[in-house]
Length: 245
Image 1 (tube, one colour):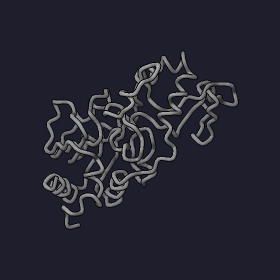
Image 2: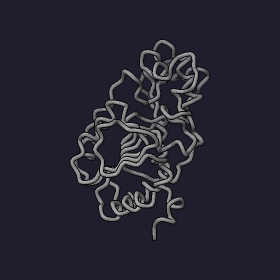
Image 3: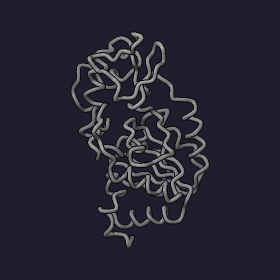
Image 4: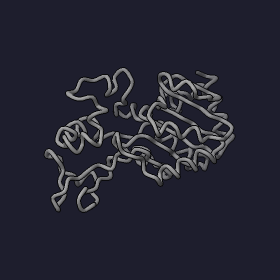
C-alpha cells in the first residue's frame, strides 16, 4: 500500500489538471449501498430485480412499487460526505482538480464543497412534474405513496433510469473534461455500466489511475491499478503513516 499511496500523492503534487471519475464505491463509506459488491443491491432479494425496478418502463407501469424501492434504497438523505468527498473538494480548492464526474446521485460531492461536479446519472435532490415540469426539491416531496404535483401530475426524480439517455450537456462536458486533462483518477466503479464507463476512452493524458474494490473491465490500461477501498487511499488519517504531509 505504501508505494501505491506515494505514487498517487506524487501525481497529485505534480499535476494541476486532474479530473476525477467516480462511482458507487465513493459513497459506500457514507452508508449508501453500491450495486455489485457482496452486500450491494444486486445481491439482495426483491420481488423484481433492481435493474427492472430502476427502468423507465417500470416507473411508468408500476410507479408505486418504484417509489417503494426508491424511498427504501435510494434516498439516504442523512448521509454525510466521507473522507474521499472531502479530499476531492480540497484538491479542487487547491486548483489541482478541474472536475468531478460522478455516476452517483446522492449529491455528497456538493455537500463536501466541490463546485465543478458533473452528475451523469442525475440527482435525487432534483425532481420535476411530468405534466407541468414544475421543479421540486427533495425536501418538498410528499412520498405517500406516489408524489404528485399541485397540478395532478406525477413527480419524477431527475435520475437517469435504465432505458433513458444521459443528458447531452453532461455528455459534452464530461468528454471535454476527460479529453483535456493530464491525469485521470477513476475510483469506486467497476467500469461496467454503459454509456458512462465509455467516457474514459476519451482520455488522452499522461496518467490514468484506477482504484476499486474488485475487478474493473479488463481493457483498462492504467499506470496504477489498485484493488482496494476508496477510503484507504483518499483518507489522509488512514495513510498519513506513509506520507510526510
